[in-house]
Length: 135
View 1 (cartoon, rainbow, N blue to C red):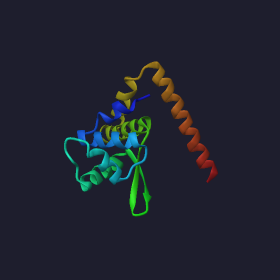
View 2: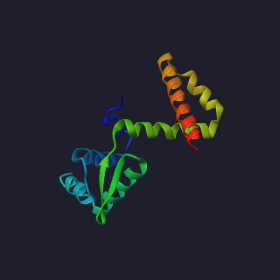
View 3: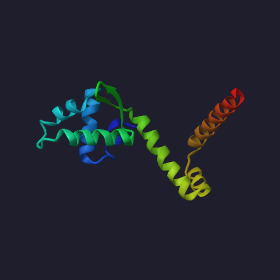
View 4: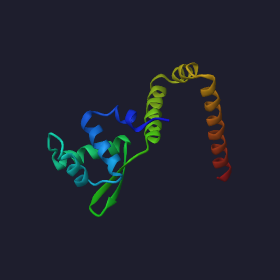
């Protein structure tokens, strides 16, 4: 749906650069990313790279897992990132504007999008009903 390039374009330059390195490497430690960035016109401090990787993890762009005392980072799928970002924006709009946000959103939908929304609501309602029956 979304390509990785458009997802990373929303990031500040250094975060975008670090994200692209992690994506290219597949799985990377802070040292791996710092090493990749040494060919850049400006050498980045290890602690700077560590901070940027941590921010990207907190923003939901990266996954991480412990590897001894360090972390290994992996880029998330562009569609997963886009879904999380869209969910955050929707929650903020609903929190701020309530039902008006929902009404305004629905008015902008194409017929195809309305059908998809209807299906998603049915699927979600079915999952909620099943969970309630299991209790």
